[in-house]
Amino acid sequence: MFKLFYTLLVIEYVVEDQDVSTSVIFPSEKACYEAMGDGAMDDLYDVLADTYGKEIMMYCKRTPFSSGGPIKPMPRP
Image 1 (tube, rainbow, N blue to C red):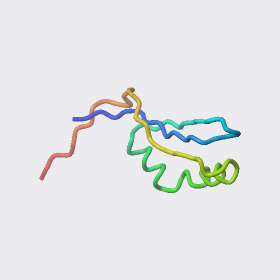
Image 2: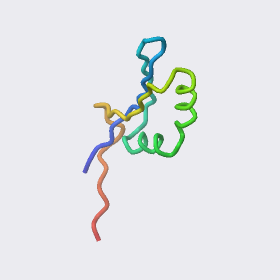
Image 3: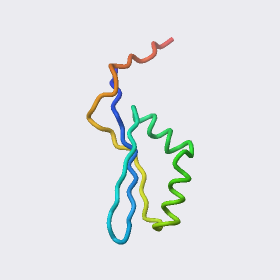
Image 4: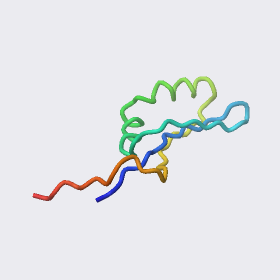
């Protein structure tokens, strides 16, 4: 069994030589990576890149806080 943890989608960029960081919380790493991978953040990334330049990073960072009880893996056939 394993536990799910809240995961932050962190967006870091630079505004007038100042580092800026913002985040969105997801209930699991999987949900975070899906949000990054399915194109949901593409428009935001493009707006930030057009406005502030290409110094942008997006990544998922797991928190130590559990988002639910233990998950039991599917039984093998």
